[in-house]
Image 1 (cartoon, rainbow, N blue to C red):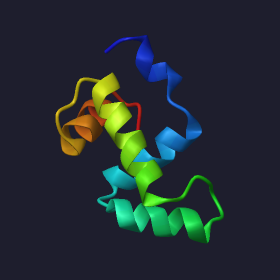
Image 2 (spheres, helix red, strand yellow; image 1 turned 120 degrees about the vertical axis):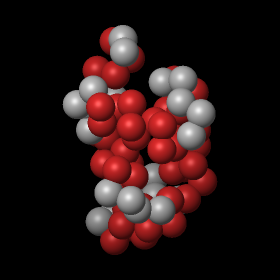
Image 3 (cartoon, helix red, strand yellow; image 1 turned 90 degrees about the vertical axis):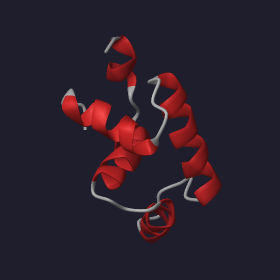
Length: 74
């Protein structure tokens, strides 16, 4: 992996951590609302995940989480 990884935002790390724990996008959205973290809309989460998959050349959410977990970034 390259330098792109070191540029994960706190929000991206939070979403990835929740995905790693097996949370759905809906569950993540509800968590963000409960914690008053914005953006919390499910469309924002979907967009962030889509961008991360593109950025790290992952075809699925599972492969994205695996790649980043394997390398110790989440």
